[in-house]
Image 1: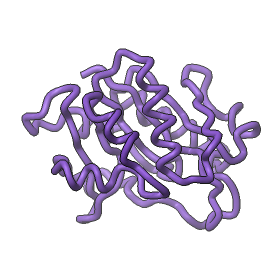
Image 2 (image 1 turned 180 degrees about the vertical axis):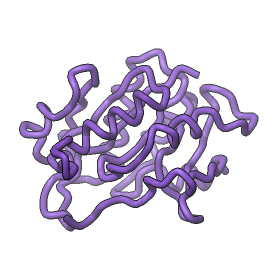
Image 3 (image 1 turned 120 degrees about the vertical axis):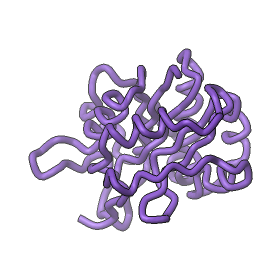
Length: 187
């Protein structure tokens, strides 16, 4: 499968105390770089990062090999970020988009590989997969190109594609053993 990675990083990070696109690991590595690297090392050929709050400051933290998509309506929630990411992904030759969040700094590339390699009978552009960690739905998710327009039309607010994935019976892929499923909401 030809995959494009999408890092949703446009939010204001209210509970966190600022845009998470500006956050850094203890060693100084930007979270946005960690997310991009996990997607690339996990098998994505291209990576798109959505930026909104703090976009001017966060832009330089995005690796030069990744594409940045600025989300003017970022305050509308995760749905605006996802729509912008999918719109940018449409310009690639990808069959699927692997979507993750910037606030999963411990997401390993192995989780992305597992999501892309899951043998669920779905192929390419028709694929819908969702990682679960300790029984809880999470990221990354894999969205086949055939679903991108419908997802973009139906997502609202801060919900992202959760409802669409549930309604369309996305394949659940357990990634508990790989870690990286906990988002960081507090410094």
